[in-house]
Amino acid sequence: QVKLMESGGGLVQAGGSLRLSCAASGSIFSTKTMGWYRQAPGKQRELVARITSDGSTNYADSVKGRFTISRDNANDTGYLQMDTLKPEDTAVYYCNLATRSDIVLGWGQGTQVTVSS
View 1: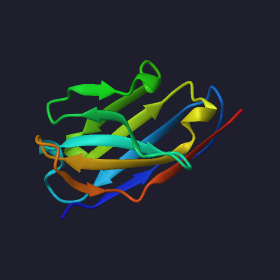
View 2: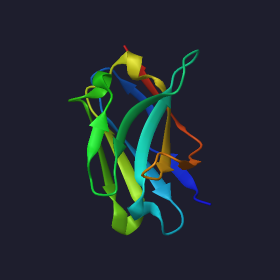
View 3: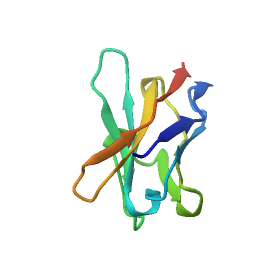
View 4: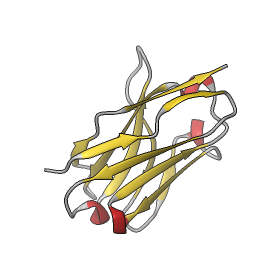
């Protein structure tokens, strides 16, 4: 069973930046797809960005050009660099690992991101 832990959330003003980290336990990180999701109050959890084991990425339209997902397989850690943050980016951010066939192997506990206007 994989364990994931997010960190790096916080309070930032609109236009600012934050870098989220997702540390994974075990030795499977490098072979799996990592995803970042977010859930705002009263809304469904939504995909923010994903990165496959070979480095292919995709992003939600709402964050394209502002967020960058990356991974460090040597340290079993993934990242989400968030720039030009907007108040509508306020949410709890979660990371997960999934297989090629999109079977989710685990979720982190989430980290709060709050963007003030």
